[in-house]
Length: 289
Length: 328
Image (cartoon, rainbow over all chains, first blue to last red):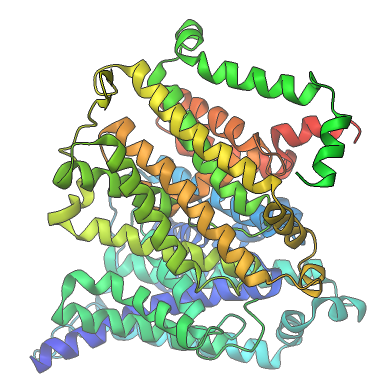
């Protein structure tokens, strides 16, 4: 029993780590540009497929960095060509636009790589279980969690210490003032979008190594990522981080005792948080309205 | 009758353009079984357009006339469908009662959950409605024994409706079914029109135009938005109830946020500032989807492209574009 619970908590942390990577990117874009990126999950999928194409040429380790970078470049192109046009307009337009993009990207992946699942080769050095007792802790899982940790630390350091990061944070608080101070807001939004998409692409590569590739692989992550943001509190990246881990572990523990409710429990958590603390666990007053 | 109404009525000639347009519209709707086969359609498709049109108009009650964006209306639509299906399968053989059950299931749940939403605005309102909507998708998906899970709820048949000696055979006769759909549609749309024309409807528009000013005028904004959301849920689940009758089937995908997005695009494509726009949008969407999905397997790209094109090039919608040309 202990082992089962431990197994599921480990699972939950890993799933939660994916939610966190997805949700942090979504959250960045939402906070600065007021756009919910419905296509976020499809950028994740695209990142996985890019890695699939790149690995035979440059190997897994390089692909782990290059594939998300390529995804981010696609993201910038999409942002410059389309999403930029709906900034500042009624939010219904940005939702519809990214919704349509999600359809298109999914169909493109299906068209190019087929509907069949494809495996992503992971180096043998990290594919082994670490111990016989805790068979479920493979090297790859530890590796995933480590990469997510590095990425999240990197993101927070970037936002805290780099010039662009500081401007992004300032823009989240008051974009008009930032623009008045002479910052190129258009460029800032593009970069911010790219950072968000990079995280999605990275999650895509990691997820592909664990569960393989298919055109819908990101879809199951989208709703939990929304919920991670709502639970953690809109406007707070630390909240998103906490929210993602919380719902990942909560769903995993529910799986032990009552598997059919595993999907539902995260929605229950959301409803409870909205009832008891409408701004989210770490959200700031007024950010949600 | 208020002073303004009297004045407006006096100023409008009996055969105004507006009234003629309305009469023409209803004539087109009533005559559907006669002209649709002539242009290569079928009555079932027209029924689908009518039902989704009602859903889009219900959404637009909130989106276009209150200025609050729900991106989770599929939930209420799907609950209406499941309510009707479950009622017909397990409880009653009356199509009327089953329709009512569907309307109540979606409407009441929407009203209850709406209470949690009314303080949110803009994208946050949208995000929370999406997430709430998915709750019902997962319930229908997982509760196999009751809902049929992934396969959807089957095993029920709409039943003929009897009024004394007169029998409306909506079971075997497509045309009779269409008129039943149109009957419920007319009730809902009539109610929506009355509500929007009433002081309550004016209040909603005031909130849409300037929420802060409305609040200063003493309007209880949260309460009005909650009311508007609830009404919108009731109308939308009426559409869902009809959808279940139309297909003799309740599909978990009717609860999925993909449908929510489609309902929103119908409303926007038709013109979200106009009362009838969403119906036009739904008709265009349904016909396009039917046509494209019969032509190519990559129909998702076309639908996605439609979303993008509407947003970038026709944000005011089909009727919105027409209205701009006529001076106020």
